[in-house]
Image (tube, rainbow, N blue to C red; front, side):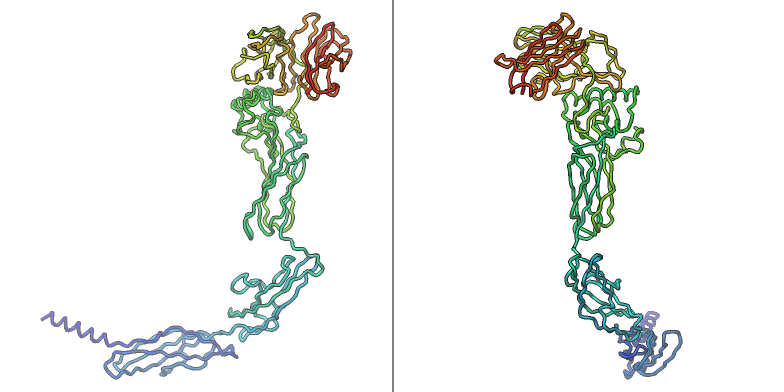
Length: 640
């Protein structure tokens, strides 16, 4: 019984709820425009439609209330089913009520707005011509110049905004009230002129501008040049010639495609400027300036540098400045270690033809405190400049570089890649001259002729490859000498603590094999083309080495083979006299004819006679005879 009552109640409730009244129309906010000739009011027409499922006659009654300006008060009430008539401009609220014959009702409310829908009216000028005159070569146009008339139904004329831009240069109302044309804008241009009222309504018309050069003094410039003035000097403040400046300019913003340009310019002067031309205007750029030099890696590098690196590492005598530190850091590790000694030794001995990890020259920015060697990692080799917007030719700030020869710790390399020369009288290396039979093998000790306190020495020897062969070396570690297949020997020795040598002490011992009968002095000689043979004393003194074969034991007169031989420009005959006297040099051609004679008074000690190639008739083989101190020295001379 209870279940039957519950079911009946549910069916009755569903029947009652199905009899509803509802809105068929949208019953949502609407907008209306003010009248064409008015800014105060506009015609409004509102109507809403409701539906019902009442079983009675399908009749619905409507009423509405209107709150003008939506301020909370009811200003209009009506039982009509339509709102019509003129309403003042503003936003109003309408509330509708609908009832059916079953006594049910429904309501809805929304806002309706009467607003200005009319944009400003405007009449534009058809076009204009602008002549660009030097020196400014500019033409500035205001939007008002192209509007013959404009007005608005709601906004006073003085409150109407005008805007202008090139056709297609943007969307929406322009932000500019004027437009500028320059020399590169010559020709016809279509422009947009806009007007906007206080309600944000806009109107637009198009016109054109013909830009022309009046007197021909307004050339179109679309690009500009960037120049970099540079000076390079050595670490000892001498001028540096024959280097190459690198200027790189990269765009970092602005219109158009990215731009990267690099110029490499060589110079024979210490100071000069490089220019990258024809860079597009109105772009931002980053400019990088550096310099480089690629001359002989061995220039200025000698065992003397090994001495100084060794003294620095041992703490005996630290390097004087950071530029010497950069030169010593041949492996580019930002530190000075025994590894730099190993690498430099290999270059001197010809195992390397260049440093594997560093350029021949390093050209770096000057250091504020050169005496501080603690921060090799702070060394910089470039300058960088920011160019926010390139609008004309510019010259970057002048920059200075310091050129450092890698490996040249004592800074002896010259500006013109010549290398420092040994100075002073030669330090003699004595060895007994002897006649060798074919296939004879001998050990030849080379001794100091005088006592000396040495920090190091280096020498290069060569043989006549048809007569002699250096088969081995004694008295030196293997890493301190190199024998080449062409008969050349490079050897060196150094000691950071220095060493005292007595006259007659052996500095190096050679193992030599004769390939044919020959005098030792005729087939073994120094090789200046490979390396300067020299000895090092203390901090700055270097003296050339010379071989003394003790060719004439009587009277302490000694002769030395001419160097170089063969020669192209000049050769020198060196000899030592115990007493002053006359010396005569005779040169004979292949037929035995005397072609040159030179006589001079020679003082006691070392002497030298120079012979220029121009003194001989032609290139070829000659015989020489040098008479001095009652002795005669003869041999063969080759002019190339």
